[in-house]
Length: 83
Image (tube, rainbow, N blue to C red; front, side, top):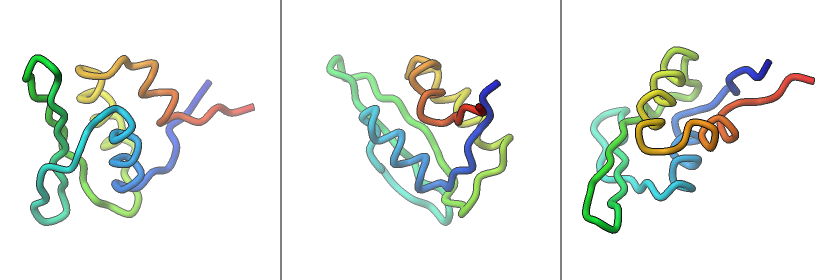
């Protein structure tokens, strides 16, 4: 059963940038990411810049991002496989 990797906010931002998200703004320790689709639709996510994200926070980010990115693609980046 795969489990969530230990990731920082910067790690998650780097992963989401692979899917076309760019930093839009930052307020305190939260970064707003956005990607604009060819039809002009805007997709926005917020990621906290913590050194280590809590598992619940990471799950919430996955849940929000899966509205825009296929969940299997996300999980391949955010989960580690236990052998």
